[in-house]
Image (cartoon, rainbow, N blue to C red; front, side, top):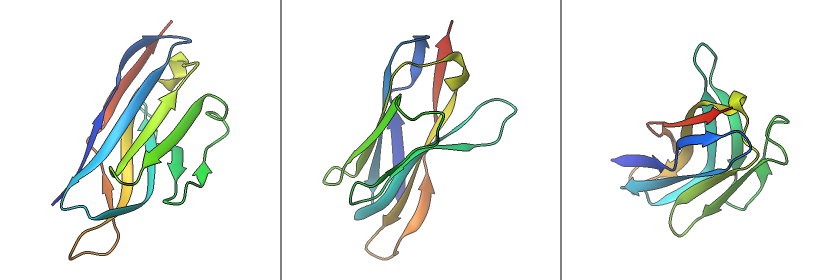
Length: 120
């Protein structure tokens, strides 16, 4: 069984920074594309950033220049460095990854979510 375990959320003032981490554990053998999504109350879940196994990154315009996604393939971990945070960044942030196990090739998984709250 595969788990995506997130950490690093919390409360921060506007202009501050947070770093999220997400590690694939359990029976995960390898990870392909990994990413972060977020969902604010009353809104749909939206893409924040993705990174391929080879390091190709994708960001929507609203986080470009503020957020940086990175990964450690050996640790099967993805990170999200968030700077210049704004109150509108407040949301539950979810880790997402395509993961292979010994018996299952590339299945998509979600983490449980971590709350990020940005105050004025």
